[in-house]
Length: 143
Image (cartoon, rainbow, N blue to C red; front, side, top):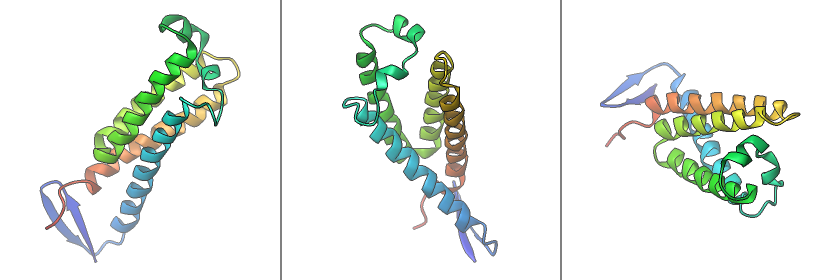
């Protein structure tokens, strides 16, 4: 027997599916909170990689400042996206998905980065799944 929390109501179900669904939600919420924050912070240190190298020349020509300065802005947005997922996963997941769509467009403008764009498309789908799971698992808490 499982207790299912939905916005505005609580149901009891003998279906064992809610437990794996809740686990999937928590796993996605954790990953999409931690990863953007870690990668966002790394935009300031370039420990994991040389992030300015991932900025398409066309985008670099449009944004003001240097590629590294653009990466500072990217890092701030990524940190905020991770915090949004932690606090409001239903909407934070959508924010991360939209952000990943922008990253994909940027990567498609760089030759030989199509594999990374494809990987980020998979992450985008995961962020959308998080947002949908949050509808069922992040509603009002039972007393």
